[in-house]
Length: 165
Image (cartoon, rainbow, N blue to C red; front, side, top):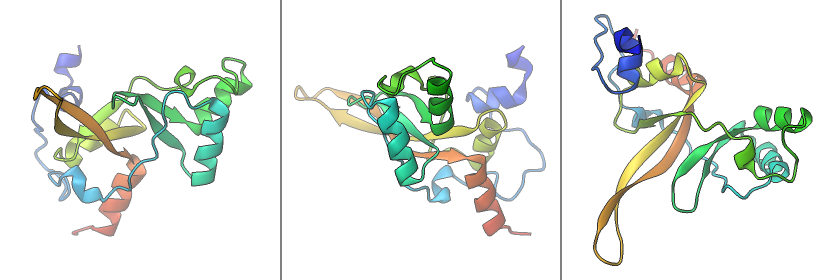
């Protein structure tokens, strides 16, 4: 039944937005949010070290990205602590044991309207930028780079600071 859900269709890129009375910010690009560069963790970081890093740097979550650039998921402070305290993970386990591997991605060129649709169901979206890379043979491939992590609070802050009404 997802194909009859317009918000799901917009979020997944199957349908252009059809909202008639869009707010002033609806078509502004995600890049205008001026997000800070994200804290990135490699998959071998332990749960203990992830907790320490997140607390020290003042982050609630961080993308976990393989050295190849593949985005593996998102580690959150609360999920890591909950998993360890419940006995589902050990402090010495790698963060890959406690990551959210289902997450939404959005591009810098996507609209805040599309982001708004994503954030209705998800707590965050990973902002990615596609970059063409070439290997030693001259073959090209597209690589996704994590540009930031955006939450509903980021969108709300942008809208409230720039309210056009």
